[in-house]
Every structure is written in C-alpha cells, then in structure tokens.
Length: 329
Image (cartoon, rainbow, N blue to C red):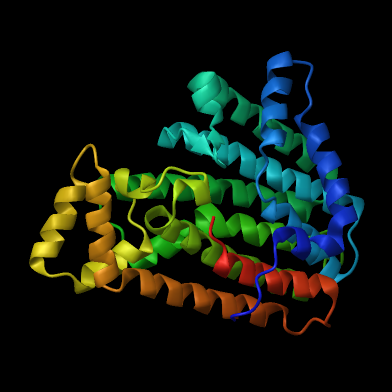
C-alpha cells in the first residue's frame, strides 16, 4: 500500500463544501448564553483536530448516494460526542496536552473540564433528537455506551495488569473503532438507509478505526511530542498495556519479563525506563507485529468498499487508509 502520501487537505478536497456545512452545524452546537462556555468553545474550535470522524460520515454518504441535512447534523453530533469523551479522558488521564496545546483541564482545571464535557454531551443529545431518525438515535446511544465501557475496561486492565490480545482488540473496538464505525454507518443511514450500505460502511469504519488506534498506540512509544501533540509514553506511565507490549510478553526472556514488570510497577517512570521498555519491545518484535496488524485491518477496510464504483469520494476513503498508515502524528 506504499504510495505518495496525500495530506488531509487534499484528501478532503472533494467534500470541501460539505465540510463547511458540517462546521457551521458544529459551531452552532457549541454556542451558549454562558460566557465561560463560549470562551472554552472558541478555544476548542481554534485548536480543532483532524475531524476524521465527521469526514467519514460525509464521505460515506457520498459513496452510498448523496448527503442530506441529517448527514451534516450527524457529522456534527459525532464530533461533539468525540470531543466530550476527549475532555473527560484528559481529566481521567491527568493529561496536560491535547493536539500540542494545553488541555482544557490544564487551563480551566478539572471542575470546568468535566462540566464542559457534560455540556457538550447534552448538546449531542439535543442534536440526536433533531435527527428524528430512530435508527440513528439507537446507533448513537449504543456507541456512547461502548465508548464509556471501553475506557473503563482499559482502566480495569491497567489496575490488574491482565490484558490479553483478545481483550485489547475488544477494548480498542469499544473506545475508538466503534465511533469510527458509527461515523460511517450514519453516512449510510442518512443517505440511502439500505442494509447493504450500512454493513459495508460498518466494516470499513471498524477496520479503519482499529488500524487508527493501533497507530496511536505505536506513537505512544515511537513518536515525539512535537509530532503527536501528546505526552509520550503516557500509556506505559499509566500501566496501559497496548498491542506491542502484549505481544512482546510471549517472546521475552525471564530477565526481560522481570525488568518490564519492575518498570510497570514503578509509580513514576523516567525517560530511561521508557527507553528500556522501547528497546525490549523492539527486540521482541512487538512494533513489527503491530504494523502487520495495521496492514491486515487496512486490507479489510479496502475490501469493504471495493464493490462501490470509482469516484473521488471512494478514492478519498482509500487515501484515508494510506494517510493513517503513514501519518507521523
């Protein structure tokens, strides 16, 4: 799948006008009569992310048929739900950076961050009602439950240090891939509503989402703060077991296993500790294994949309897979 890497700006060019409509819905949803909410909302908009999820909703609707007003509303709702979970996650993780800038909890402290996350969740609910589409409502409600359950599962496994590869896949499906899947399925629901389109988009979104989270997990040890805009080694510092480390355990010597357990048992882990983990995981083939799994998920995502006729929108969905595989942040 090696090809010239396109930027997100180029990939999303075919839906440039669609994105404007989504952004209008998104900005309107963040408005409030409360001054502090508007202040935090403007900070969020100013430091926005890649908007991968709403892009998936719009592209899916274009590949299946044509977007409707509900497609743009659903795209905004998905981004709101994602944003609320990120804000709450940063509080739980005590993260100081998000997208290379101070996190909301760092600037306004935990109380405001939690309340702002709650406010955005409430706006998601209001937007859900506005869709007046029971299938979409049910899907989003189910996804919200999975997002929360996935995060709690991760915390539980960090406390017990009992993560397995199967549990890991279940966890990243719930906390990441389920929202990617829902983003794509909403594109189908709000355009054709056909079962075959919904199934194809669910598969694409799920497999793309799994690969996306795996890539993020690689960045935790292999990336840099300048590239990712996040604290490097955050997962290891919180004893979060990701695939490279889980796989490596099967190939470690007794001495290496003891060393890893010792590092994970430390309350505070130094850069030297992180480098030791990185060296051990690399030597055990953990990073290569994760890359192989990303490739597997990528091919499965491509297969899901292969029956659709060629179009600029389908090509953008193909290019997103390559973008994720080669991104550096």
